[in-house]
Length: 425
Image (cartoon, rainbow, N blue to C red; front, top):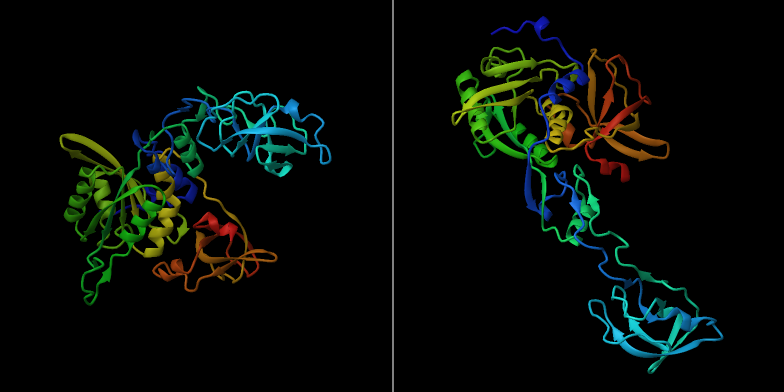
């Protein structure tokens, strides 16, 4: 089948992403153990079952007292109180604090009845059953009231919150061992090409190992999805169709292929898309990654028709990874219920010139270095789309706009780190 260019014009990155995202929405909720919620999005409001802390407690080690007993106390005029009990955290006092008495207390222990303040150890000196207090204190000083952190019945975490370690701590403090979150999308990954062999197969003449499936699967994991490896499809419509349908039977929410999307005689992904569903676009004004097909596949699965989006990545390894960052990443995050799909960028100074461009937006692999005058972007060698080592040596992409035809060294460009942690190094 021939594809007339005028029917599928080359789109900008933004136009292509807009078309991709129209096919995705947050998935349904599932209830999982609290430690499996990290990075996921809450599908329910979290209501506090009780106060945190549940009772007034001491904010530091010291003596629980009645503040009135220490009125006028100072470095040269201490007030003496009788110590009637020692109280550790996790226990309740057996005696009541009355005028002229104190209870030695450890941080976090519930305040004893009768006490209304805590004087820290540093302001005291104990001698047997007596303690001298060298400072006056106010009622409530060094005491955490019940509900200081969270009040019973209040909405502590809102639906739509993305869960970090601190939210997991709060869920545990509230007694939530399981919680409803948006389920993780299942992403089926399929490499295409007669030249490919799997990683453990002998590398015969003319063959290369299937790296794309593994790099894309790792990206799926990185952004919160569940990868389903479908293996390698040969350059035939029948084999590709059968393997794609197998992905649908495994419950895939997104199909990702690599290879088979350019204009060669054996590039069959577009043919299968057209026959089994619909093509939305297959060319994007970017480098690497110009031949990028997107559409959907519809197939009968156990008597029920299923329609699943398909992203057809280029076969070159750099193109497949960069295309994933720009299109598959936001699709996965959308299915996870994440609202902010923006990947942070910042300004960096390009250390080397880029002498020629071709009217496409370039994503060049760079090592990002913080120097006295700001971040610098250092090219990681040969920028060919088949040079996987240019990705290995990089920690981000420098973005060169379409309209720039010549980019001299020293130009300030936008840089997109693979990991936001690079900004903190």
